[in-house]
Length: 409
Image 1 (cartoon, rainbow, N blue to C red):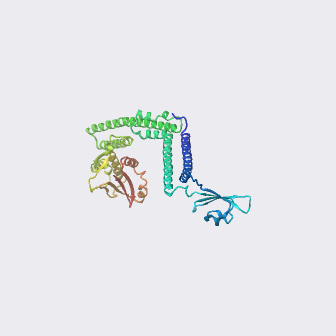
Image 2 (image 1 turned 60 degrees about the vertical axis):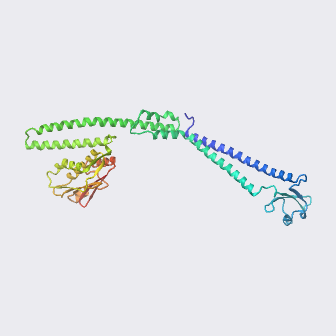
């Protein structure tokens, strides 16, 4: 479409603009000179016509200083050098000439008092010239804009095409709009080709992500469902105390596996049917997490205190919030040793605080801080990502032999 590169097109456009403006300014100055010349001649003819038939002239020659106008005599007696002189007050232009007598000078006096325009005419002439200059300036500015827009039109076209593309909903029309062959073989075409390849990679990645999540959701949950059904059948059988304990361990492991699968699938989904704008209550999800993880405290003398100051609602993904709370509760239950005091869960209007005690200075040194939550439970990094996806914030602080997990919304 374009024969020259973007750099050459900009240079050519600038050169054309400068050339056109130079020609216009040249014509303007030429017109101003001719206008001034015509103006002076018109005044001379007008004065001659007024004195007709006795035509007087404003140009006179003098070979004697005493014959000069009175205002010039004192100056002429100083024996000025040859040349041209102007006396603005007297409105006289004087040329000093040499003669055969080296001791004397000849004077040519030109009286311009009747030729120069009046002050009002000067202002009108200045106004006309200013208007012409302003018009040329505006014309040059407009011409520059038009020429530069024409030169960078492919860049603007490419930017508009990219702005109209939704990366989450790529279509065949989007790929056609950004096709590199539409922009020529230059810098813009190279940029369009790079964007085109990037969009193709994004499309392939999104397609793989959708295929994986849809397949993994079925393939990973089916064995969990089968195991859960088998456990329910076993519970109806006559089991010994040892078998019951083993069955409980299998049930808990199955529940943990189910939670982990849901957690990773929740993070893997790019779009989740608008569930990120759902409103839900916090308290039921907290109670559910405590009941699911209470088995971790079965062999510990530890109380769990829930202090619900309010009953807040959260806007976001309920499953993501449930996974986050489950991870925080599980970490608190697992890392609190026997007889270390109670675990406190405080629910406020815009935040959830889970506090557990540390046993010793060693535990305190190994505990996480607000800037580093790695190593304190597998799910803390996942909790952080879930919060980022939903616009929540998560922090973990260890101080005064206790750990405080804070989830705010």
